[in-house]
Image 1: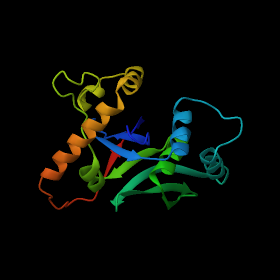
Image 2 (image 1 turned 180 degrees about the vertical axis):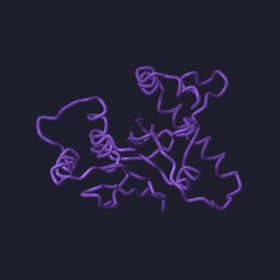
Image 3 (image 1 turned 90 degrees about the horizontal axis):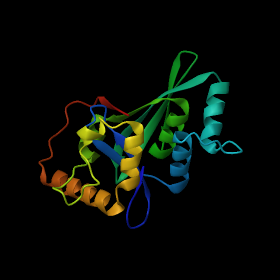
Length: 188
């Protein structure tokens, strides 16, 4: 989780399973709080909305098995929540922020369509020695959770935004090739 430098909008960074890229998704402050509280093991005095949904699904003998970021349309990400109940799989349309907040409560896997990863993911890289707070995605795979948390706490919004902008500029310069495979890529 990070914040954009100008508007301080929260950004969820989903890491691809191969540890090479990150999918940044801008989310609202309430959803960011819900995700962070769960990841930090904090318990609110009363159930939050995502806790309520998790409890309802469980009480109805359902299980959230995965959430998938399915597409990016008009600068808006779309997601689906997959629930299994009595052997039947049900998919529900959702905002990615709500789907992720539910996934972290239900220990569900998070996926993104290959097309979304190809179109919107970034690599975080250090540029020479000017931005020592940034590290490459491959080196993030070697960090333990405490070190990764420290990285997120120490990277400045300006460094993060600069990296995002450079990745966006590079992506816009590359040729757009049609995607042949619409499989999903697991994110973690």
